[in-house]
Length: 120
Image 1 (cartoon, rainbow, N blue to C red):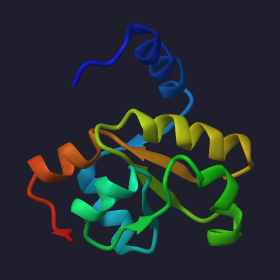
Image 2 (image 1 turned 120 degrees about the vertical axis):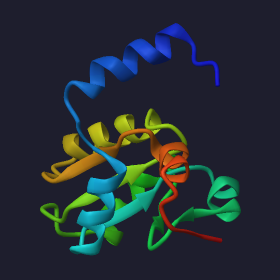
Image 3 (image 1 turned 180 degrees about the horizontal axis):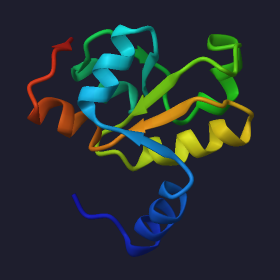
């Protein structure tokens, strides 16, 4: 997928400020109680998702996160299609005071490439 240079520059600037985890780490942490949150578009979510993931779209995550995850120390792992939007969302949550937020590197594409469990 093509991404504009300005978008990629923004992601790289924010990536330095956000913790990233691998798919294997995300699976292990979710099994241990971390909240795995899919921030893709509703149509992407409906087509399939990581097993056990919750949906909270990027368009509303800042508005709705405090109602869904009131404890700002809760471990949250965000993922999107390729690991770009989740970097931006993780940065926003950190600015809101969330202390244990990660972006899953490679996103949904990497999850599928590695054969991690999915659900529809």
